[in-house]
Length: 73
Image (cartoon, rainbow, N blue to C red; front, side):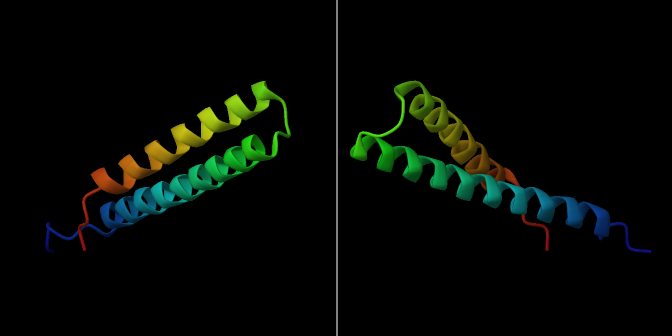
């Protein structure tokens, strides 16, 4: 049996990359939502700050997951 090919490790790498892409998309959506609410002057400042911070965290976490996960195809 070939020890270099490990299907479970390949599945986990793809799962990390997929989760990173989902987090990145959610972060982008949150940042767009926050920007639109700021421009329209609707929504409470506290809510916009919280949503914006969570969106930034999601965005950068997703980017780092996609970037740091090795592609082992």
